[in-house]
Image 1 (cartoon, rainbow, N blue to C red):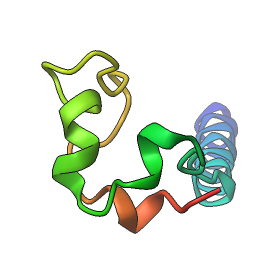
Image 2 (spheres, rainbow, N blue to C red):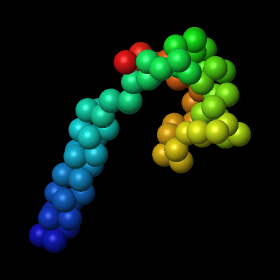
Image 3 (cartoon, one colour):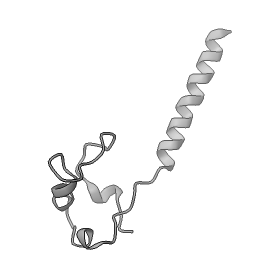
Length: 73
């Protein structure tokens, strides 16, 4: 009986994480002067790359396809 309870809890946690991940939306691209001219990922990575002034957070995906997730605000 204990294994069924553990399995049920693990399934509930997994379902919660999947729902949270699917419902989360990335922040929009700001409409300020620094971001208005950004058209390709290299523009973004100049500041948000590992050597930039505002690098991506450690939980950010490692791909460089900025405009696949982020949209203009």
